[in-house]
Length: 113
Length: 114
Image 1: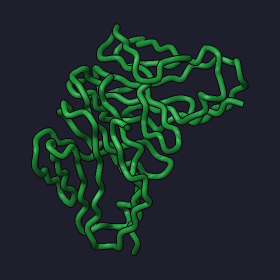
Image 2: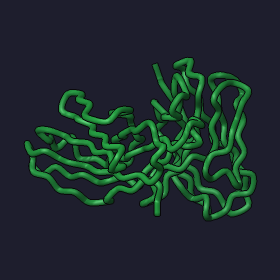
Image 3: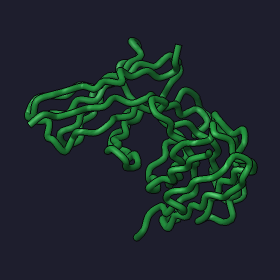
Image 4: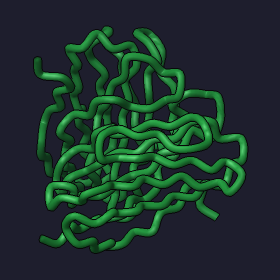
């Protein structure tokens, strides 16, 4: 079982709808969770971090964490064509800094006008 | 403000050749990282440096060496390139290393080993 799993997609969502991206992880001791956005041919950029159970909102983005069920999700409200990108989930599975930050394979999101 | 600068952007090598990928950041960050990204594999950590003078192995360090020359610069060296090292390489930095998350990435180096 992979440590961090994402559906590779592509996930196709109409413009203006809510895009929901999911990520599951295997280590119950994981404490910190991150979402990165990566446009095609570009480098990743950190867009969200979440550390506690529940929701964290930042503009049109909401990160949701459920440690009991071992999943973290990213919701994008009022999806725009500019949101079309690959979204990478990253989970820190221990307390040793970068060595324990594991990335999922990413979900490719397409927003259709 | 350039952020994280990587050179070169593209490189083609023959099997067995060596080369050094350069990375520099101008944000006074303590932590720097080298990742590789292969299709369908996400990002995998090669080496990282939590502070000047320290380096540690990541998930896939074999075949690579690193040097944290000073606080700004963190280079990655392939001593004897192999086709399996064909990948996109990203350097990244962050202000702190509590959770190991890179904050700023360079534009990447697209490396092909023939």
